[in-house]
Length: 499
Image 1: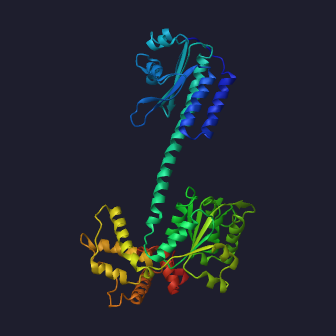
Image 2: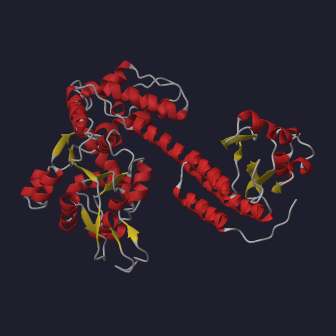
Image 3: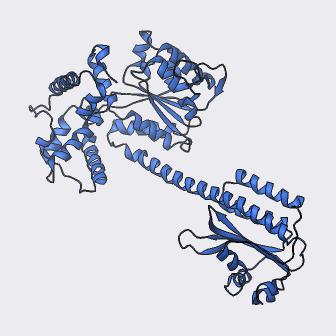
């Protein structure tokens, strides 16, 4: 093989720059592979070439892209007897030749194609060969030399990194598509159970507003499924490829909520050791669900109004306004009109949030949906546990349908989960439901409320005011516990309540 230790020519240096740019600019694998082979072919003025990659499942090398070469010709070059490519793959070292007939042992493929020059380099990633770049010519010999080989190897090293990046991005995209389909399936309308007229009215409004950007206010008691509706609207809308962000606004201090929503600049307050993105920035292009909107302070109300009116906000401690595009869906279990009359809530913000109102009916107003919900929860529990779907005794179904469900759908789901555990392998009967017995006119919701309050306060006292521990003992969420303590206006000494 001829020796030539001159520096790379401008064309080859340009090729190295181009493949570096391709790493940053081409994220799809197929276009990237085409670009890599085009750059290599042009840089050394080769007439033909192909790029091999290892198949991750079979570990076999296969041609993924080729230039001016037929499948039959490429197959000849890849035969073990041809030795050019196989020598490179076996040794992990690049080769070049301007006398291929002599250097490669009278290869039949070399003779048949009348090659005057060949070059081949391995694609190596972290010490492991993942493929090879093969180039040849029947006319030009000048660009096939040691300098060319050095260039091709440097080029191949960059190309291997680019291919790994493209593979990684491709895997992420596949994972994202799978997660997206799962989210769409989970939060599709079919996951919001209800055949009653009141739920059909909710579905009708949801369908009409899916692909608009107007603000939506969800009203209803705790546990009626407001966040589930918000997610269903997002994942069935034109914003579904962007983020859905949910923030609970109740029982958060003004400063903490402001930092969570809008972010802050480093040094803007004690503890602000770094810049922080707010949730509005995270939700840009998507949907922001603000739960218990009635509880935000006047300062936060003013900042939220600016986002709705102008689409801008400032981080805490910052002077720069940032632009954001979000659809806001808010929820409350309070009557916002009453809060406006009491001067607790800004009237202008109320009308910005209340473009469309969806009122979630309490479970007691759609009793016909209870058997459907029960079957849904039983199937959901069975899917998680891998067990058979439990059956409910007729008297248990009647009891569930007659009960007033002050905790709504959330309380029903908790009741069914508890009953499944307590019933063991047997069908669920009335005794596993742990609800008051019927008095002939339906179950006594007032009695259950009194019992519920008594149990919660007793456990809270036993846990010395630690709300997190209390929620764990009761098997409920911390948010539910906050709801109930606010509803009952239970106030404990500040020093004894641990969040």
